[in-house]
Length: 357
Image (cartoon, helix red, strand yellow):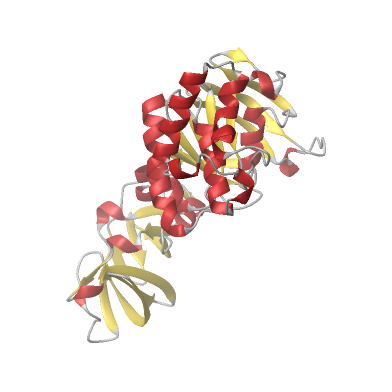
């Protein structure tokens, strides 16, 4: 359990001095001991580069890496006291499931009775107790990944647990239960966990804090609620949430926000916006259907809809711009295609040049 500090860490795989091409742009960040973090972003955004820099598989092109204020930048992986779980299963084919789980403890000289107790504890949590005596090589891909997870979780003394999309090969029905089990183990051991994924649902249900990345940079860091409720950029607004956040062009005239002739009250901005072209952003979840024109109400046309279980997404167009509205399916479809949409002031944010004002 360690506090991990990235001090001006940056990396270029081809040693290029042009930072715009780096896999990881210079970054200063502190991850507190005992918390769970998720690195979220598309393939190639730098998530795995950060993870491999922390584990020592990658030596950064510049900067320092500290564990509890100790510089470990040039310390080999084996001496960093790190547990890492990769995207695809890594098992010892000649060993049984029990021996695979026990191997990290054997290497550290644990006594046999303590090894047995710890392995049985992890196996019970992962629901693989009945497989402990089996040969690991005969298991399916999802079962092998459970072994990899178990081997990463079996130690309770690691500085950090690094997980690189560990649930990729796990069937969807098992993913939710596994996330709960991993969180339960982390809570007991108070581990510092860094979890890489491109799945926003996985990240938001697992981590204490999210770091949304793009092109080697951290675009926003915060709790799942903070990133959903107040995305500081259009990128995060589009990346987090399903459907993505709505963004509509607007003008500021005499201190008022105007969208297609409708005057809108929004969250206040400290910027001088008079005469500016801006965008207003609002989540589909917060738009409601109104019965008549009024304050913060815009007109729209219903084009189509998608049914997602108990939820329905109305696909609308307002003055030529798409707007998604999320409603309960039980409310039924609107009787007419012409709609009035209410955009509540407390959920309406202003953006310019892709950034929140």
